[in-house]
Length: 190
Image 1 (cartoon, rainbow, N blue to C red):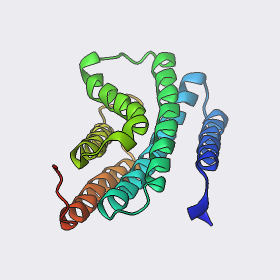
Image 2 (image 1 turned 90 degrees about the horizontal axis):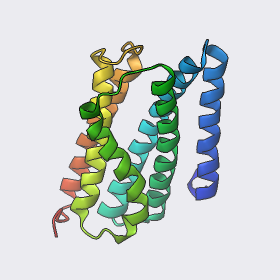
Image 3 (image 1 turned 60 degrees about the horizontal axis):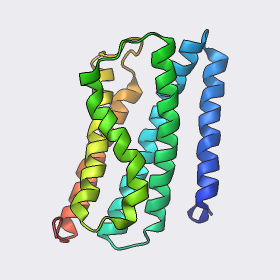
Image 4 (image 1 turned 180 degrees about the vertical axis):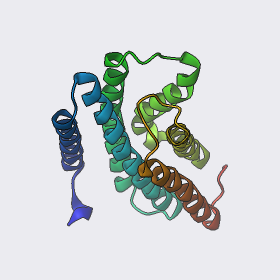
């Protein structure tokens, strides 16, 4: 049953999906720059789905006081997969000579640091507000990135249906998870 998959197996499955994404990109792309651009695109979509699963687990682990194991596993898988996404993204930027604008990268850089650090300190964080800052900040950075794609701000990435779906998923996720948190009547700041 899917509920009983170990962290090791979840990481293996995630890695396998990332390899499939790379393999698919390798087959359909014409050059290395395009391979990593496509890999970064589809890997980012996978990360978005895993982020939403992690936020769901957070909401029902801390708010409804259920098992934290699913939350910790989903956070570790999200971190692992998002760093594979980062490698794809960094190689795509490098191989395609995409100019880097430091002021535009600051928010994403902070989000990446949070994604890296959070799995290491999640058990030590006692105040709910700090968990919420993590989930909402990372989600906002993802939403802003997707919004940039919808507006056509990224070279070589025309707006697609998935961009609208991804943006709607983050917004609906925020609305749903926020309503569950508010209805739980647990204090956000202790």
